[in-house]
Length: 590
Ligand code: DPX
Ligand code: MG
Image (cartoon, rainbow, N blue to C red; front, side, top):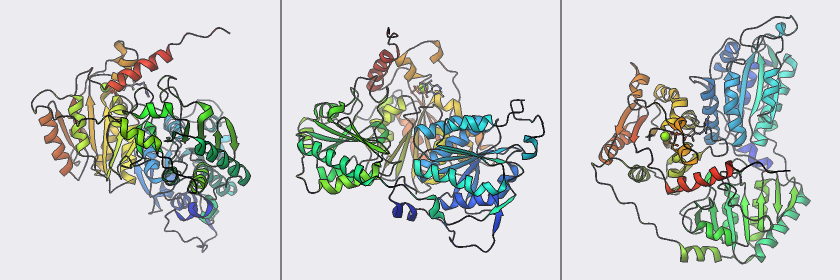
């Protein structure tokens, strides 16, 4: 997979490609073929697509490259989310849609990729270049003569948006966009007119040109490392906190090295679950203010130095602005700058900073105070007891059984809703992974994202926890898991409504129409699919469905878990009430 912001040499060698860099036997290729080669060069084995007449020739061109397989989605929102999920496992992704009717739906998923720092390349077909100056009204547009609006809209949700209008410019513009995505770990947009996809342009150059990561400013890096080292050395009770941006910006390994060099307690933010081994002796839990895992928030809040690597402190993660380490004791490591006790060091990249600080910290005495305190004060949580097999299924029993199937090869994907909190409480053995879309929080994200992730990680056991309300947004993408025979296990939590919203602010709008979720698999199977659907109303039924799911390798298994509407986590209730208070603050007088 591709990882972000690696030093120059490492970044270039991590890409897998079957392409030889100096294959210059032909001097021209089609623009579509150029694009396909570039996608292959940055490590993609698949791209996602929904067909439309503005992109059909482009899709033909992309099909000619057999190393980057074309995968279809039911709609463009799902197509974008499938790519977003693929990028989580593979490091980058691409999706191809048609003009406006397709692209505007995909924009929502592209915004998710922006918020979650994932390099997703959205490619949209667009009108024939001859129509631009010919005063032609075109289908799939706003019915005006303006064909620039899509590009302009894309600029707000990408780090680079380009529209190809001439063949000669195509290589430069395609490279400009792809390089920006790879460097910045953000989505980009490329618009290709329908009559240019098969037009000729120059052959692609070496892939290294796409992977030239910028380096930190040496003086700024040294100053930031010195300041951070001083703060950590002076601290009696230092803590390290892993944040959600750590992986995107290539800092996971350096963070582990730093943690071991400093020797202190290490917590994770919920969006960083899986970025630090939970079985590590320095691990002290998940920090989420008053709903942190036992013993964790007390240590963070009483620490005198907190190094937060790639954190996102928003209203949700600070639990309605009630929990955030004080600036004067925080080393806040952003993707491209570092703040030490309120002083900002610009042009310092996260992976460079963590690696340099780890190297320096090895020369300092280790400080295990917060680890020792955690071990002294932690509450030993009792393993939840198995429920009576025939009593109605509870959330706790559902989670107990899901926990049992999480092995080192599992990726647990959790959707917005109480599935977040159920997921936070799961213990991850070393090797297990966790995916969450906590910054953007678009319900329905998880179904197509799981589809994309499963394609990119074929050897892993993929487990999804998704609520009924979320599932109703993007349910049809399960049919693509059926189509490609992906053995994903889906726990569909049917609590008859938007329970998280019930906890924040209840009303009739939180009730949803019930579906026959288990039965939906028959619809998707039709005559040729092999998905399984089960409904579990008791622990015994869940255990039996789970056994079938684990043995089933030729398609997804959906297990509808029937839960009482108000059977939610304690953490959701506490978090929901605090977020509700923050949301309802009256306007401040000037
Ligand atoms: C909404 C949310 O059933 O989960 O566990 O029952 O809450 P829980 P469900 O999937 O319901 C989800 C629901 C309606 N959020 O509780 S979290 C508002 C919302 C959003 N994204 C979009 N629309 C509305 N987050 C696209
Ligand atoms: Mg629900």
